[in-house]
Image (tube, rainbow, N blue to C red; front, side):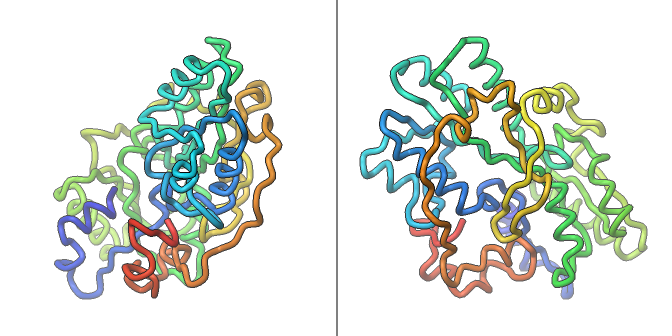
Length: 314
């Protein structure tokens, strides 16, 4: 959302010489690996299966197709606005398997608000005794990815604009490792023009004075300690695992999987599907964008063969 606001208000064009605003892995859609999308597509091919997903995943390409194309071919794929919508669909279709594609960020740090919602959804499914509901879990913990980028010798990042809405759950302290390990400042900001400008100004101040810290420029939405109840909810349902990030590769301990006591709601455990071999699109440089090595305009496909209507990458 920061990237959208920065583009919408033309902030890159007014930044002084020597200051660049780069887009990193700030969105759960853009970091979802082809292999995860391929797995969701394989689940969509199951007979008697209904796939539910947020709309932003529909046109993100896997190795050979998208969920949108699968829907056009007649598969039952539905856009929902809340995981609870998927629960209601499962309750209304007791003879079909309803699978929710869970994509989002968790804490340590960076906690996508949908993650506790999906945890609550699994607990609600257990309470309702729904036998035909499950989740394909592709959640990620952003701390390890932030560490990987900060530690990347090919990427020179002087400061991080940290997520606003996800920090409503984590609070501010989990980002402290950026300062302690990398001497790099960070600022949690909101998404209005004044929020972003205040965040950039605070980062520049800390860089110029060589006094790195983790600041909160979004106090109207983010408290220092976040939401402990939501964090406990996620810990109850999910546990850490290794996972693959688009462009960053496999990062140990950076994913989440459904705990064994809720295995019935884990689509990976319930359905043994054949997933096609993962193929990365030729010429796509989304990974370099996510690492901060280039901007989207530097990718030779951007705006040409790769457009929002016909995406090559996310």
